[in-house]
Image 1 (cartoon, rainbow, N blue to C red):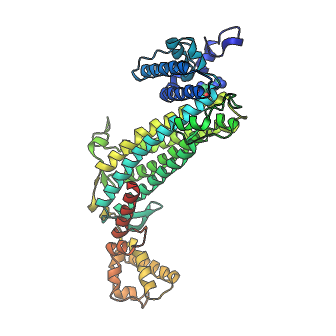
Image 2: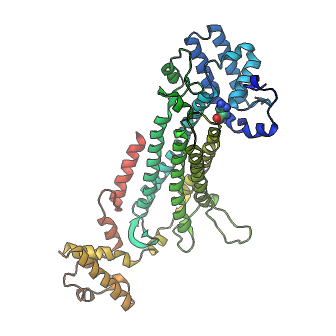
Image 3: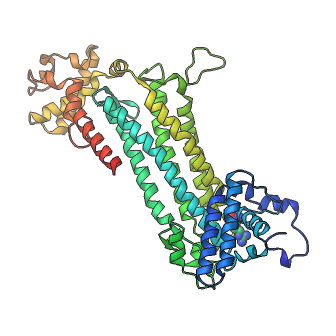
Length: 456
Ligand code: ARG
């Protein structure tokens, strides 16, 4: 028997059932559903709607149902439309007719919204733990590589020398922001829709604040029409997941390039590399390609849900059942990618010699301009002179750092012996010693700051 069959004269068509049933995927929320129902039964008892015996019997029965789910022996019935229906059906089988009192004053509309919020809150905690491991790993590797030089790029063109630690830390900061974002929307997610009924609120004198606190939420929602259909938390989860995916994808792209033998900057550990069935020499960065690729599906899940939500009329509409699968999928995706990316970062070998080979003297042309600035020349003019120095070295077919003092002086009389000191990669990097700069000292300051944040 369905939960709503009273008015109908024939059972649902099997095609409708297949389309309508969400049990195959929303059974993932069994724990949240049972806990929510236990809290609701207790709230009904506090409101005097159930007597103590009835509430106790319901609570004990629900504990049985939970055990069946946890030990994987729960048997779904053909009429189990969704997890809510399934739990209540089984409860009534176990404790008899009194089970039918549980749904008093409640609707699946406020029930599903409550369960789903609880599920997302647990998901946030788990994703956050994976992010924490990755940030910790990035910081460890950055500490070890705080002084290792590498070519910094803009437009994928050689730009200025930087340190490997600085590069690694840039991702630690992105992921820290992601963690902050999860925590922030987690606070918005932690309100309880239970007691909103189908749309208009419950007619029983339920203490919704008490109920919310019992369920681990911080407050009840304040408008029942909004409360049953607000899926901002799901969209925010999908956005946060998309941005994590975007950050991981960018890290992945760097590592894919850097592990290409043409660069040879890093080598992925064997256990994080894959080979080719055809080409014996191949060593592919598959985990990173998957991290990059899966960012697409994370973003797809977000745009899918937003598209579902955008045209919805007020309150609950069945379209909202489309909210769970993208959220589950984005969670599963992140939980699959994050540990693999962490493993890659933790185990990859960094080749300082190859990284150094990637530095080209022309990357010091900004430093040459800055040298002239220190001698009093306006930067615009200094930029021009340094540009002419690049051109001169190219015309002569020599390295930019091979120009003689005489040659430099032909471009500006401000050049003196001490110009040689400005023309080194180490000097270039060390000179960028401001907060957020690439000098080893600045990188160590960043590391200390991130460690301070992590310890809070
Ligand atoms: N399975 C439904 C969902 O996921 C539960 C709510 C059903 N409510 C209803 N009035 N049909 O949204």
